[in-house]
Amino acid sequence: MTPTPQLPRRLMLVPCLWLAAGIVHAQDRWPGIGPAAPASAAASPPATAPAGSDDPQRLDDLQREINAQTQRLEELRRSLAEQERAVANLQHALDEERLAAERGAGVAPSTVLPTLAQQAPAQQTPQAQAAPQQAQRQQQQQQRQQPVGQAPESATRPPEVAQIFDQPGVLTPAGQFILEPSLQYGYSANDRVALVGYTVIPAILIGLIDVRQVKTTSGVATLTGRMGIGGRFELEAKVPYVYLNGDTVSREIFTGSAQDRVFNARGDGIGDVEMTARYQLNRGGPDKAFYIGWLRYKSRTGKDLFEVVTDCVQRCLQNTTGTGLPLELPTGTGFEAIQPGVTWLYPSDPVVFFGTFSYLYNFERNDVTRTVLDGQTESLGDVQLGDIWGFNLGMGLALNEKASISLGYDTSLVGKTQQNGQNAPGAVRITLGTLLLGGTYRFSDRWSLNVALGVGVTRDTPDMTLTARVPISF
Image: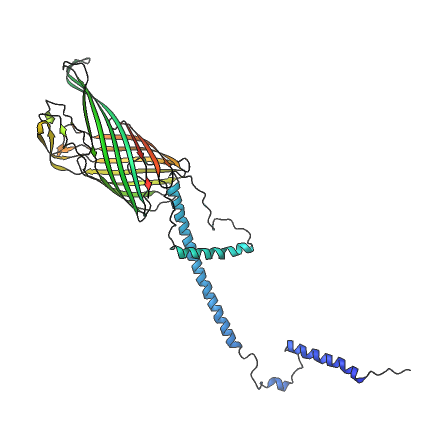
């Protein structure tokens, strides 16, 4: 048998050293690996503090950091809730402004972007997940520039409903001034037949037949200024210049003439200056009415009926000489008046319904006298014109971005004139009714043209009125 050769002792030490190095390396990485300690050594406490003696202090620091982060998250949640409420308020205000400015007001309704709550949920992407954070930063920047809950100011003047009545419906924006020159042309013709006598049979009249036709042409140039204050308040001043021309055509039987007699009178000058204050009572919206209360004061700066000369020699109430007509037509009513009223607008896509209810009170004048021919005066005593109840109703419709039309009806109930506490001789109640059609065209953000046509539907109402207005915004 051949004996196994013996390796040199130095070569046998190499594997042993490699194994010992691996064990030491494993103990460095995993401290729990190592030879078991004797029971006596395990039971006895260590002589020195272990390396983890600072763990409680570190846990306290971590807990404090967690509490701080939790508090920060709560603050962010509260801030996010406040911002969501602010966004909702801004969206509501924006919807109202768009509705009041566009529907039925000469502007086509624009596309309203849906809110985040109205958008359909989509699959989240990394970009979509980062979008809320970016939007939040942008919103915070906007809030620093603008107070929370305040609607953004419009860069242009919102267009108005095509105006057909004397009282406009849409208030002037806050801080803006509107100068509105206007021109109104009117024409009326009334026929009057007076029969004084008695009939023998229905076909024969014995007495006096007085046939008269009164044709009146009027032109009123008005300069109106409106100023918006605080968004819900408006002041208006109106100064008119009046021109009137009246022709009275009469033919009296039994006077020895078969020709018509024409009596002409005219007058021009400043009319009655007016002041009006308006206030929006509520904040309407879609399918919710807007209410605007207003108070109008009318002066008597124009030349009235008692100041012009009347064609009378003796008392006009018992006239025997003269026509009893004024030689010069008055430009004012001669009475101060105050008129409260309420205007309402109800948006209902695609039209806007609007109307007004008002009451005009004429103040009484004492010791009134009028001038007749030859410089004589006639005492009339205390005179008070009849009060006027007014009501109108209309609707506006937008045709495109610049044009709109309005239809409406206006009526007024005029009471009897009082003289010395009693009804004046010949005083009657009068009903005035006018059918109106109007349109507005916007040429720019600063000015537009409004035209309204009125047609009388009662005998006491002017047959035709044509009004053109040019509101200019500053």
